[in-house]
Image (cartoon, rainbow, N blue to C red; front, side):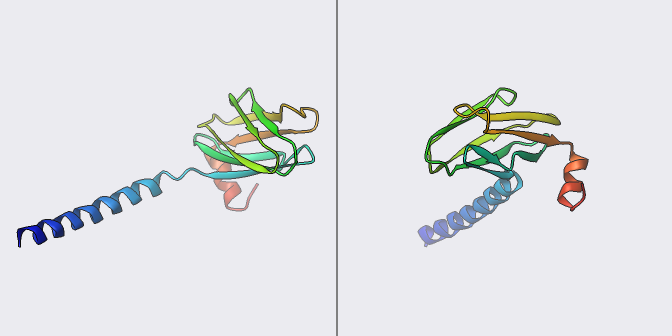
Length: 129
């Protein structure tokens, strides 16, 4: 009888802990943005993100050759093999413009990340500019 009671208490505790863990994880969701590299061009070439938040950028290289995502202003470098994807985390960033490029094709693989202040980000999400 004691073992079944302990098991029941353990299960309740586990469920409570699991629901708290899920709520904690859900409260800290990192916004995800996507970039595509094709024909040595980033698309979109301008990526708007919320300032003051850590963001995840998934870069899909559709070219057959590797490329290195590079940004001195964001202090990031990431080699992405041809036909594969890579992930770069940046931020939290101050409002502003942060250029990035492909190190192997710097004349064509160019872009910029614009970190928008909260009010502008909310307006953009609501469909305004």
